[in-house]
Length: 422
Image (cartoon, rainbow, N blue to C red; front, side, top):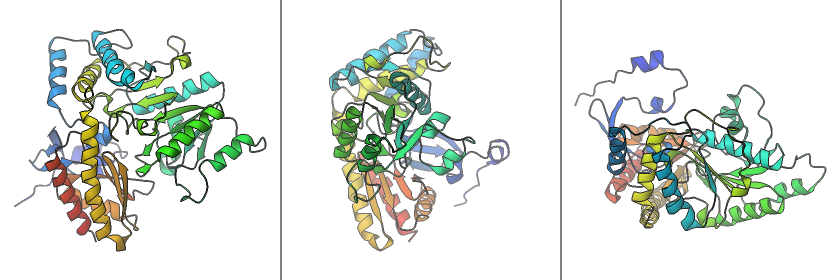
C-alpha cells in the first residue's frame, strides 16, 4: 500500500515554531467521532489523548452535539459577556443540582474566562485579596498554566523560562513522595511556617493537583491530601485544588479530591466542563470568600453560551445516576491490568506505572523511551502523548466514554509499541 505524505507546508511555513502536538503527529486531521480521529487521507487513529483531557465524553458526542445544534438553529445567544442568558441559567441550575448539592458543596461559581489558566489566575487573585498576603505555595512538578501568575506556581523550568521576567510570590514545596518517603509529610513546610527566621512570607494559599498530569502522573495519596488540608486550616491558608485536567470525572468521582474527603476553599475547573471541547472555565469558592467588586475581574469571553449548552447536556446525560464514576473505575482496572503485565514483562528496562481512574502513566529507566513508544504508537494508529519534566512518561488519557473493546484495541497497540521499541 502506498502511503501519501500529508501536505504540511502551510503549517510549517506560516504557523509559529511554538506549535508542539502536531510535531509528534505529522498528519492533517479532518474529522473525529467518539474515540477515533481520521486524517484527510482516510487513516484511522484511536485517541488516547482526548484533547489533553478536554474531551472526556469523546469527539462530537451525539447527545451534546444535538443540544448544541438545536440551540444554534434557534438563534440562541452565542456571545453574552457575563449577561444573564437562558443557556447560562440552565447550566448553573444543572451544576447546582447535579454536582454541588449532592456533594454538600455551597461554592459560588465564577466564570473567569475561557481557559484553565484564566481560572487559576482568578483563584490566585482572590486568595491574595481575601487574605491580604502575596505568597502562594505550590508543589514540585506542578503545572497550572502559561500566563504569568499561573507560571509562577508551575514547576517546569522550560515553561517558566518562557516568561522572560522573574516569577515571584510563589514558593515550591515537595509533592507527595517527592523525597521517596524518607521524611514525614510536610515536615519542611510546617517547620518553615512555624520558624520566624525561615524567611517564608506567610502564604495566602496553597495550590495543588491531586494527580499531576503534565508533571508526570504523580498521584497524591488521600492521607497526604487530608494532611495538607489540615495544615492549611491550622495555619490560616486557603486550599486551592486545581481540578482542570483531573476533574469532570477523570479519576472516577466528578471532583478528583472527593476520594480524600476534603473540601477545598477554591476549586479551578476547565477542560471537560463544557463536555464538547468548547472553551469554558469555572472558579469555585466558598461563599464567604466572594468579596469581589463588580467588574473587578472580567474578560470578553467569559460567557461562552454554546459551552453552557453542552456543559448542561453533559451533566444531565452522565452525572445524574452515578454510573459514569463506576464505569470509569472499571475501565481504569482494565488499563491497570495491561500496565501491570507490561511492567512485569519489561522489568529489566525499569518499567513502572501509576495512575487513577482513566489517567495513567508508564515509565522506563531510559527517559527517551517514552517518546519512542509514543512515536511508534502513532505509526500504528494510536494517539498518546508524553508528560513529565523530561517527557519521560507515556501518558494514557482516553475518553471516559470509551468502550471496553476500544480500550482493549488501544492497549494492544500500546503493548506492541512498547515491545517494538525494546
